[in-house]
Length: 245
Ligand SMILES: C[S@@+](CC[C@H](N)C(=O)[O-])C[C@H]1O[C@@H](n2cnc3c(N)ncnc32)[C@H](O)[C@@H]1O
Image (tube, rainbow, N blue to C red):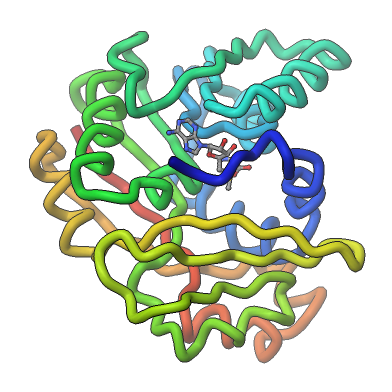
């Protein structure tokens, strides 16, 4: 159904060094997450564990990572072997996951944009909801469906661009091409409208849904300039989402 991350795992890991990852993606995400001390966390589509490890470093008590790419989980386990943090990783498809526990927080950075249909999005949201305690929160960073394709090239200076072959309709593939250390790699994710996302969150039972525009860290502004980041803030390629059970 989706891009095979087994073939791009190392390059994807390298792309986490791009400045926008730290200064916008991670900064926006951790702002939404707030204090993790003592919390239990389920990281869906955890990839090679870029965020999974940081949750433990930020005080989470119990952290569990799930991804359907064996290669991504292999990289995550290698890091765990070289520096043990007592993080458990499993290879599984979120679409088929069901309930594996009861967590304070479920996170899934860039998972939902792999749903190609509203039925798949609904199933992913069901897995997320099933693994949250009552009062628990789902927090994610996702492709922003609302970004107009005419602005897709404005992110080239941050190390990536999106492209589409047709007008955006439910299920349209959006190609993401990253350039890291002079090497390019691509993967597709899929357009579903913000209305479809709202429908899926509400249909599985989430009480409140909040959309968060990207924010830049003060360090990011110091190291580059406000002007450098302005296209990212104006055209909003990615978006934070918070849902309350
Ligand atoms: C863009 S990467 C993000 C990885 C990680 N969250 C991060 O931010 O570094 C997307 C990940 O989603 C995983 N993925 C896509 N569809 C999935 C599914 N249905 N179940 C589990 N993992 C999935 C891919 O294997 C890949 O590792």
